[in-house]
Length: 113
Length: 113
Image (cartoon, rainbow over all chains, first blue to last red; front, side, top):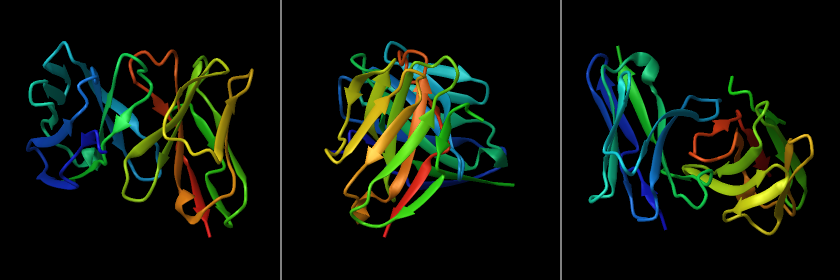
């Protein structure tokens, strides 16, 4: 049972354009959502998060949007840079155990110069 | 560098054997988490320890066990290894685990032949 899904295994974008990565979840108990970025041979690195009481959170070039009714969140990267090329994981957790993250399968983002 | 150290980085062993993976959390972090990433899979939560005590458990096999020592380092023991146990095993740490923002190590890649 995949409670967090990233339906696009990969995304290719031109440098300077917007990258939009999508994530869907099924568990209504999730109330905190995160995006992690992973380079090869490294562990995942926290990127940005959003609480279920908000519908948007912004940090520099990165913005996460949450649509609770649709159980959908997205990560926008504007403008995209070649250094953003990595695997992006969406993760979700609930108030009963915030460290127990449920991850999506990841989306490989490639930003072309 | 996340500050989380995992050893060994690579490990090759045979079916039926037992291995121990080691993790040193970031200085000051009391929570340690173990995640498994199999081929083409997202990260799967295994277990969490907080200040030496088990806090949360995921779909961890009975053949696997973990502990956190007084100096806060943690070990994940995998026994009666099967081919399907081949995976990347990540350790992560956080101060209290209140928000899901975890700091991951680089992982230990286990190959079972």
